[in-house]
Each structure stands twice: as C-alpha cells, then as structure tokens.
Image (tube, rainbow, N blue to C red):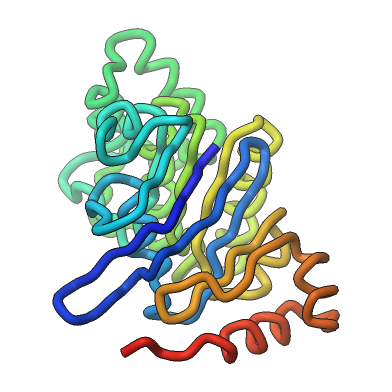
Length: 243
C-alpha cells in the first residue's frame, strides 16, 4: 500500500506540489490524473525517492520514503517518464544490470530474465543492443528493468506516452495483469481513455494539489456527469493557480 499525507515540494518560488494526500491499495490500479505541469511527476519522484519532500510524509509498504529510502526502493519498481536505456548494452544486459543492483545473481537472475522476457514478449530483441530501438521496445525493456526484482509496488509515469496503438494495448494488458497478481500499481497520465480503461481509483491533481479523488463511479456521481472527461474539466476548473 502507498500512503501519501500532506506532501509538498517547492522549487524556488514555485510550489510544485501543495499538501497532496491520497492512498493506493494493493490489488488496485490508482491513477494520478492531471494536465501537464500539474505536479504528477514531481509527486511520483518523491515516492520513488529521487526527490525529498519539503513537507508531509509518504509510506510505501509501511516504510517511510525518507527515513527508509533503501527499503522502499527494494519493494518498488519504477518507470520514470522518459527513462533511458544504456544504448551499447543489449536488452538482456540492461535488465541484468538492474537485477544485480537488487541483489539477484547467477541462475536466479537468469530465470527471472527468462520469465520477464516471456511476460513482456521481448524474445525477438532481447539480445540486441538497445541503440535504435523503437519507442515501444524501449518502454518494454525499461518496464522489464522495473519489474526484474518482482516488486510489490509499481509506479509508472505516463507509461504509454509515445506508443502506437498495438504497443499501448499490450502494455495496458500487462498493467491489468499486475493488478490481478495483487500488486499496488500507481500510474500517472493525462489520457482520459487510459485512466477510464485501467484505474480502480482516480486522484485528479491540478496546480499541485488534489482537486478530486474517488472511484470512477463516485466521481461521475459527485459531478453528475457520465463522461470522465467532463468530470476532469469540472474538477480542475475549481482549483485556482496558487502562483
């Protein structure tokens, strides 16, 4: 489970995240929805311990992301927006490198790479250097790195950005499978169709703060709208720019 309580982050005079609170449960897909610049990526970066919150606290699997950062990283797989690969390494070597960082070695690492190669259908290019890969191939290898240590918590920052229709469809099916396995999945997106197709719970962020949260049905009922896009527009329109 991921628990976020009053988390804030400032960059100079810009308050990127303002006292954000929400929770994401195991066996559920929770979506962070918001326009570009809303604070979604900054919130995720604090959760995967790249940024330190200026205020509030967050726990992943009951562990504090600041005081127990190393333990948090061990239980988490993260797919940052625009995550790069080492271009001179093969897909297998990229995945193995991350596996070793998480303490996997030898036969156990090889088995895990074989499993994840089948899961993500990487067999066609697993032993090719990643330089020149398509966006879909790069994303699948980056996701394999994030999952190689079999994490309970999976954080995805706009995972389908730049993917074609078939690659997007395949990735969505994988995310649904992670939920079926009982994992806690937290993903950010600004694509309403994606959120509607995947998410059990939605947290709408605008101008660095939570504008609304709930299940899709709860939000439709609250705003008396059948269309989630209309819910989104109405929710963010009620939040003023703090700057």
